[in-house]
Length: 79
Image 1 (tube, helix red, strand yellow):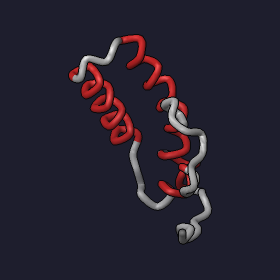
Image 2 (tube, helix red, strand yellow):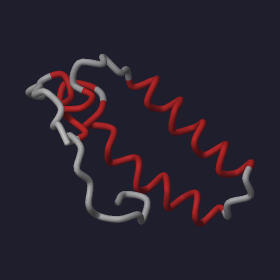
Image 3 (cartoon, one colour):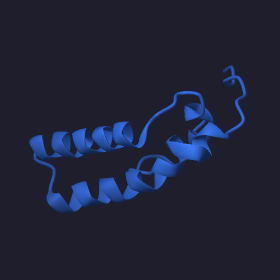
């Protein structure tokens, strides 16, 4: 949904899914940079790359840092 796909997602919330992974700020930033480099390599327009970054950036506090570390952990849902 963040990148314009279907708004429905049946998996765990970002905070919960990443809580025990100890993802550092630097790792998140490297992944974001790699994503942007890949999009550029594929010829995605600069405006569209900026839109992707604008969608990804707000997820950082849910994936790294204190917020992610304090998230409750529950088992994945079975389908």
